[in-house]
Image (cartoon, rainbow, N blue to C red; front, side, top):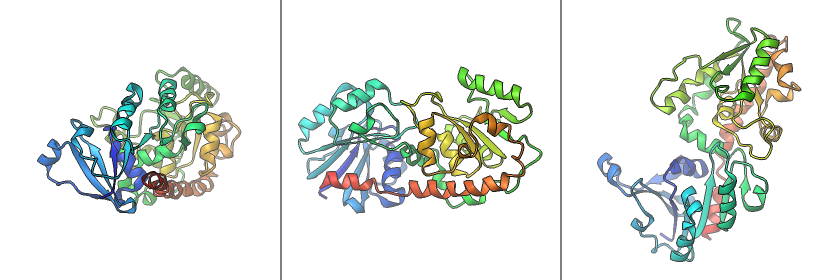
Length: 339
């Protein structure tokens, strides 16, 4: 084997690789035995398109545990810690012909210190889903990149063949027209300000609750993500507040909140930075294109009669998000580095 890609970022590295290359395209090459898996220092896959081994370090594993000197072409996907402590210099010195890659695919802000350190690292490839001033000078910026991560991290790839069968077909008059999360407003004055004003101006329009299931005491994070299927599929409309302050146009990013709303194809209005809304609207349908502001949306007196019209438009979101996740064109960047 001539080529290898080693993921040093142990945290969610598999989710990133599956999103970039496709879970179905990676052939598992390690011994599949629970005891061996638990004690192994790394796991290995094979990616036919790149004719490359892909190696993921276990929590106790180190790059020195992996014999990569036998590979002619090497890509090392470094971690956030490697960026901060300058360990990338060590990798370049030890493996002179290696290529260094950094992936920021989370729905989180990339801090300025981390961004500045990324610039110093002189990376061979930097894929980033979080905006910073000057990001496109040093990275390939794609705010949708987090979708590829969320699809696997929160386990929605299991729903791929079922997603078009989930959700209500008609407007449900037993519910309030609009649903939003109360958790989104906790500890956030700007969300509270907006919601309090909307409740006062438009009483009995928004259900501001934790969840349909109200099960936020569940122990495992992914259960919480799965229970919200109801919140995004069996409500009439959703009012989605993104994490970043809606006037912050320099550090915006897309979280799982927007991902879920698009994935389940329900009509929703997004409260987020204008630039982020424009980015999402390039490929997906948002109610923001129908209403000038959130007040116009909440106060609209034809939400019931226009529900099927908006629902039909949002159906395409579901197909488009899966189409994007399953577009593995980012593989070409890795192919160029290996060649």
